[in-house]
Structures are given as C-alpha cells and as structure tokens.
Length: 423
Ligand SMILES: C[S@@+](CC[C@H](N)C(=O)[O-])C[C@H]1O[C@@H](n2cnc3c(N)ncnc32)[C@H](O)[C@@H]1O
Image 1 (tube, rainbow, N blue to C red):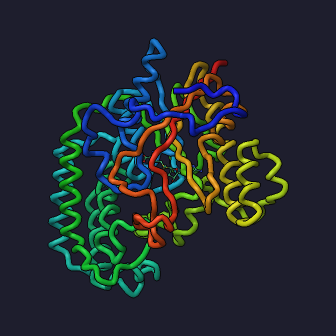
Image 2 (image 1 turned 30 degrees about the horizontal axis):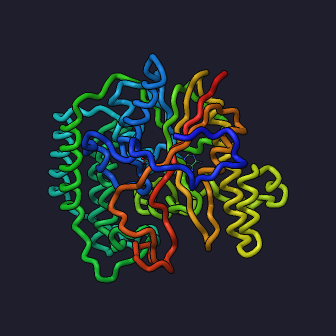
Image 3 (image 1 turned 90 degrees about the vertical axis):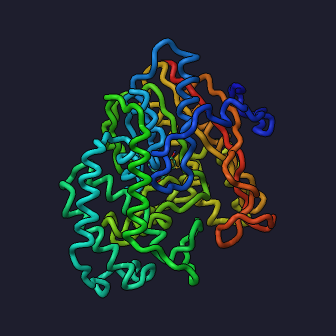
C-alpha cells in the first residue's frame, strides 16, 4: 500500500499489485451466484477489508455500509459476520437480489412454496395475454415464451404471501431466468437478439434456477442476527436518514461503464419497476440532466478531473461532458461517504481506470483527490489483478471479448483506496 499525501508527484503507474487483494482463502459461497450481476466484486474483498480493519483496530466494526450495493456481496458477507449493514442501490433489480441474499429462509417453507408453485403452474391453464404485453417484451419473446412466463409470475404471486421474503425469493429466481427464456444473445453485455437461439422453456429454467438457489441456501452455515437495511434509490438523495457507519466497503460504477438500466430491462419490465426501462438511467452516477450547465459545473471539478476533461474537450465534447458529470458526482460521493462515517471510521473503494480514444480516464486518482478534499486522512492505495476469465483486455462492437486491439479497452486491474475519518 502506498500513502497518498501529495497528488502532484503521485503516479499511479508506480503502484504495485498487492497479492493480498488478489485472491481469497476460502471458496465463495454459492449464494453469490444465484443471479447474474455485471461488475459484481468477489466476496473475498469484504473478507480482506474486515481483516484489514482488525489489523488496525481493536473492536470489530458495528455497522458496514455499501452505497453501491449491487447484488449484495458486501450485504451478505456483513450478515454472515454478524455485522449490521446499511446499503442502497439505484437499480431495483440489484436491491431485489441483495435483499434475497441477506434474508433468512427456512428450508421447509421454501420447499412448501416451491411445491405449490410447480403444482399450480401445471394444474392451471396458460392464458394468452401476448397482445396486451408491453412492446419491449414482445420484442424479446415469442407469444408462447411470453405467455409461459406471465403464467409463472402470476402463480408466484398467488402462492406466496404478499410483501413476504418468500415472494421476494421466488421473484428473484424468476428474474434470473428472463434472459435464457428470451431471444437475448447469451453472455452479451449489450442487449441484442440472437436470431439462432432456441430459448429455454420457462418452467424448466425456473426449476433449475430454484434448485440452485435452494442448494445455495443449504450451504449457508450461519446468518447472524445483525440488522440489514437495503434501500432502493440514489446515494446522492439527501432525504434519507443513514445510520452512523464504521466502515464503507464499496465499488462505485466506473465511468464509461455498463449501462445497468439497459442490461436489466427484462427484469425491470416484468417486475413492474418501470414502464420505460430507460427511466432507470436517471439519477445514476454520471447521468446527465437536461438542465446541466457544463461551463458552470466545470469550475467545481478538482484538478485531476479538470485535466482529464480538458484532454477530452478538444475532440470529444459530449464524452467530456459525460466524464465531467461522473467526476462531479463522485466528488459528492466522497463528501457524503465522509459525512456518514463515525470518528475513526474507514472507507474502502474498489475502482478501475478506463481509456477513451487514447485518453486515460484516471478514476482512481480522481477519487483519491476527492477523498482528500472531503477530509479523509491516511489515504492509502493499492492495486489488485482482476482474476476472472477475462483473457484479453478488448471488447468488440458487440460487447464480446476480442483479441483485436481495435476494440474498446477494458481494465484488467483495479485499485483499492482506503481513507480514514479522524474527527
Ligand atoms: C460496480 S457496481 C457494484 C457491484 C457490487 N459491489 C456487487 O458486488 O454486486 C456499481 C453499482 O452502483 C449502482 N449505482 C449507480 N448509480 C447509483 C446511485 N446514484 N446511487 C446508488 N447506486 C448507484 C449501480 O446500479 C451498480 O449496481
């Protein structure tokens, strides 16, 4: 780890990979894989962060927060360690998964509802509602696929108690089969139709999914009694009352990164979170408002942010505006993160850098400066290797990995930035 005191002479290239953050020591619990989620971080990041905390502090943290909680990796690990948790995410699909992962379920009741769902699905006849389906769903499903899924959803709603954790559980399972049962090109990070695909049947996919989920639940050895609050909305919404936090463990969205709203359009539409999935982009970090005054806002950028935006401005004005908005939002995130921490609290951010047309977008340096400006002290920074199946750092125009360096560059390492609140 290297200390960040003076950003002027600081070069991120000098930061060495720290193997401590590369790999976990235990196998990740199956519960972390019950629903696909892009940019999920490995669960061992939380374990390592807690280890880091205990090396520097006598008592365990009382409450952890993750304000970009995604599919609830930190939320679940906090609960497993009997530590209270507060988290939020602007994406309702993320909080659906995060809640499902951090609630306690009785196997007997899960089996009972599951049996009832399968029974009712087979017993009741499937109605044809396709003509009334939203156009966007008609685009992704054939009449038969749509009707089977609508029937399954209806059965889940009628067999599980309203507002119960059990309904949440089966809707989460339902959400994760919506791509395999549609024409969505498998594994693509961009929404596009696969004309050659033979989509899975809803009931088969659902059975397989719930079996995976039930097995994952059986594996969970201990879920403590700690509190877990997971909210849907923007961290930058100041109307929330957030409890005091000892440690933040989070990974913010990266600039020029995945469009979560587009990727989760099937779940959002089926579960009724939005009428138009594009509405989900609103309020996400870096999203532009129609009344965004670029020239005025530019003045609030810190020096790292300003330098990068100026490099982009010459040739890529709209990209420069988007990056500037992202940086400004992240400056507010650093300030708000500082404000919710107790004295001696710590914040750990996992963040990667990107590149746009040969301009390096140094999110890590920008966040380090934002944290210094927000009042954090003892900021230290280290680097980890992203060790999943990524074999090449490039993506083609369809969003698939490619060895062709003409593709868009993606990151294969990321930074861990830790700061402390002294007073
Ligand atoms: C890198 S992902 C976090 C992944 C998470 N660590 C996990 O393991 O699943 C970043 C998350 O930030 C969320 N996000 C974007 N803008 C937000 C905002 N204004 N407030 C809260 N969450 C936001 C996205 O929906 C996304 O889930």
